[in-house]
Length: 198
Image (cartoon, rainbow, N blue to C red; front, side):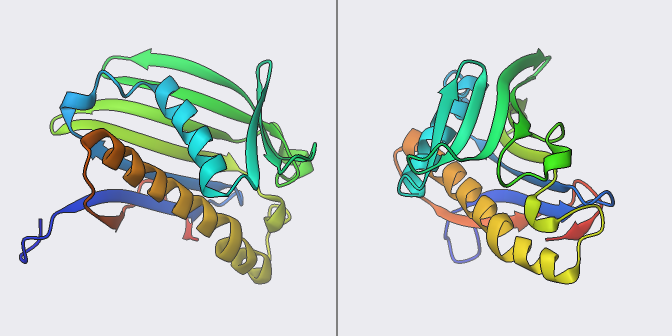
């Protein structure tokens, strides 16, 4: 809450280009502890996939095929990003679900074995922290290990911005649905990894 009495819901965010030209993006927020029983990694994955389809007006359509999840373009067979999983893990006060990138049109062909999208749930002092993290992602738009300034600008203004907006809005919507009321969102820049801001 600020000095004017306005209540804010903080969402932490960082997006950077690492030295190996892979992308690291992380967003998190803290939910009230009373909602902990609902906030499992599997719940987050299913809600995120449904939200991705809804917020893109079905332009992107997540599809399941056995142990593979694809972000398809409309009704075509074109997968923008393909994943295996999710793989679930539990450690002390933290649980997670990880989708590992295995291909897709938006991924550099030689780097399809790298990258993952993870959904984390962690019990913290002031509630439950929900984290979405994209790591080791090598976008086709960046071209390779030494992307040009033009490629960086293009990626920053398209895919990076879309991913940030979708993730922040997803976290804000999730809180609103759970609590039954909305608050103003404040995006707080954090530094988890060292790299070039994107």
